Length: 491
Image 1 (cartoon, rainbow, N blue to C red):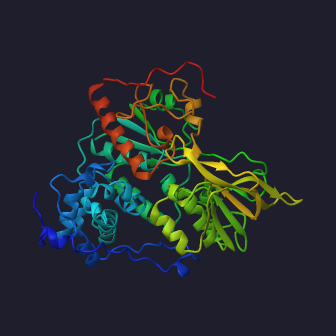
Image 2 (image 1 turned 30 degrees about the vertical axis):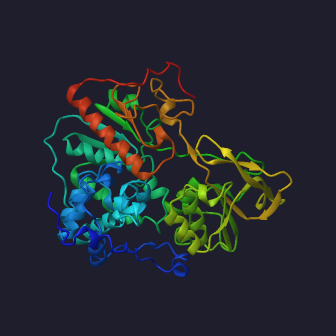
Image 3 (image 1 turned 45 degrees about the vertical axis):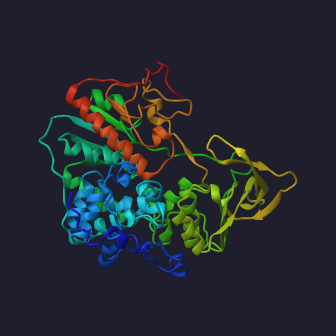
């Protein structure tokens, strides 16, 4: 392929990675405007010059959706930003989203050769740049749509897996309708990720782009209750169904006092703030226990925990603290999110675990009884297991506690689809290569199969599912490695 980089490799490798401009921490931690400001064309071209145009681009192979990184970078160097955006859209229908929230350091940038001796290419920043440029230009490069096949596919869930699958299938000529349980489309992209990290208008614009491609959307439909999988296939004539409902059932610590007023799951706290606009109270009168002048703790250390604690800070918390039972080295959150949290005044209390929540006579949270931990041998996750230190308990003042220790599978679809096999954790069983389930014509992917993961991994499942759905609709052949489910209804 052509190479539009005018510099020899030695010169390219001397260029330092360009820093993404950010809003000042002492300003941004009081509002919900976006933290990162994005590249302008000068910074984007300078960063693109760092690409050494590998003959075998491992960055592309590390991308779960297979974005042609080298090709879109070369189009940036040629000044063809719209062409670069169109090139990304061949494999990724949500470039403005993934450019903001994808953990590139573990995916494409993790495979960048430059990272072996210095900083990897800022692939995510460049992806965001061309996606934003495309949106501002008003010139959308839609992919070609094949002639209609006469086949209908239902997508259950409008999160990253569902949207990706829908985008790929509509290009194959199939009729695609996405069903969303909530009143706004986007799944975890809108209810789980705060405005300051992923503005809702960005998600809405990407979904509007999909409408222009021909994807149909329907909100306020709770599949499993409003309509079942069997009814979609037998009564409404859908030839295939892709289940991408996510893993939205919150997990708790199961310690005394979790029933107290002021103890939230991170799911509820973030959903109320994101979808119900509680952060704009009293303009939107959706109650969230007032964070102003409160001592807030968030238990957990993933990206959801960072989102929750940074949200509480913006809502006026007197103190906002991460409480985590391991050390910072074991935290699964993105390094950028941890960096931003520290800059914004978030306190990190490591090697600590709440063992009880204590309330006042009116049932409101006032303190957490915490226990110090030390690290022992590695557990199944590969991280060293936290071990309680005897006699180390102490009281921590807190008026609001947000539990962000993971989620599990919502059992609604499984409980109303008895021939859909699940594992012992009630996640849907699906072939990891084809996303086919035990039920002919039904596919599943994303967090409802794997448990909580990243946006881009869910998108990868959506792409695999789309390819498998297309093959099934084209050949009529159903093959799966998943054994048939038991005939008893799941509880």
